[in-house]
Image (cartoon, rainbow, N blue to C red; front, side, top):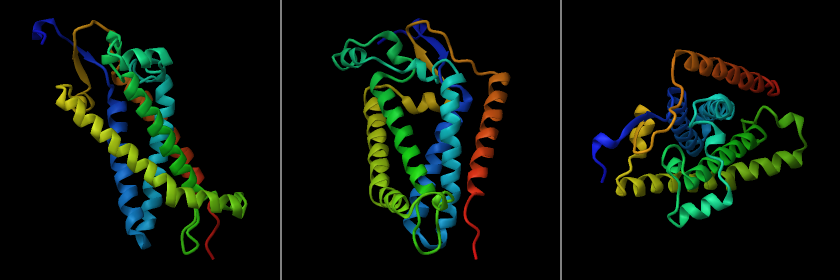
Length: 228
């Protein structure tokens, strides 16, 4: 155990990344609840879906221009780095942002959630609700998307969420609080590393990106066929 005097407090997760994370948690929870209830709750299911899509698009952009440790370039690892980490020969920067295993979880979650929300845009329950893009594709495509969304994708999302929670509990057991860092943004590290930028200018840029993503998703929502 290191003495506190040897530790350096570093801003790892900028505010936009932290807000994204917890908003995504709320959005996925809302999707799960509204989708399970069904019926009139499907109105909220669509709303949560649009919100989650907005967040995912924001994260893709923020992964290119965001804070140092939120950028994808900070946690894209070579296969050798992953093997070394699993063998206990990880590098110091693996403990800063996402570790090689954590990075895999992040990319998997983003990809699967994009697939789930994207398939929702193409799904039709053949009762009262249809995704806004269903009229642009064939019935066969709608059928495939609906089947994936209802019978496959949601279970993959659930599995990834449970795996994510298990990883958090495991790291807490190892005295490594991942939740705390995602709340206040800072980590105490032995190594001296460059912090993520997290100032008024970067936060304003994040708001602009979020607004642009929300505008794009709103436009997608207006493409639905008019009700008769």
